[in-house]
Image (cartoon, helix red, strand yellow):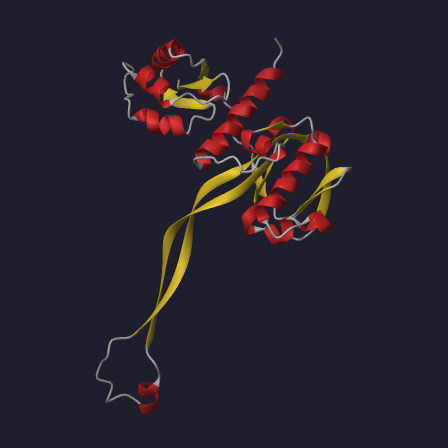
Length: 262
C-alpha cells in the first residue's frame, strides 16, 4: 500500500531543510531536494512504504517542516474536466457556454474551488516544409509533365515551452471542473467584460478571477487565485503543470478532511 507525505500548510520548505531531512532516508539524496523542493505544493512525495514515509516525516519535523503520512488512496483524484472557451460572470450566476455556443447558468453556491496561475506548458507545433525534388533524367517523359514543378512536402513537430494563464473552476463535491487556458481563447473569454475589457490579456484575466472570487466568496482559492484577487503586480508563477495540479489535489484533500465527521 503506497503512502504520501503531505504538508500541513502550503508554506514551502527551504532547499536546506529538505537536504537535511533527506539525509539517511533510503532512496533519497540531497540532489532530490532540488526537484522536490521546486514542486513542493502540498504533496512532497508519493509511493513510499509506511515505514519509509514515517522516517521522512520524523526527519522533516526535526527541520521544522510539519507533515502528515497519508494513504495515497485518501488523496482525491482531479475531477473530470470540461474545456471552456467562454463564460460570463453575472451577479445571479456563472454562465457557461458549450462548443455550440449554448449557455446554461450555474449558481455561485455550487463553486467550491477556484485555481488560477501562470503555468509553464509543453506544446507541440506542427511545421510544414517544402523542398525541390532531386533532379532526374525526365527526357523520356511527357513534355507537359516535365514542366510541372516537383515539390516534396514534409511535416514535422517540435516541442515548445509557453507560459499560460490557467484557470480551474471546481464544483461542489468535486463532481466536475471547468478548465480554461485563457491565452488561447482570449477573444471569446473576455467578451463579457464589456467596457472593462482592455488589450492586455493578463489584466483581463485578473478581472475575471476577481469577478469569480467576488461572486463565490465561499470558494477555496489556490495561491495563484489569491494573488489575482489581491491585485498583485505579477501573477503567481507555478514551476510546472504538476505543481499547479498537485496544489489543487492538496486543497481538495483538505476540504474533504474538513467535511468528515470528527
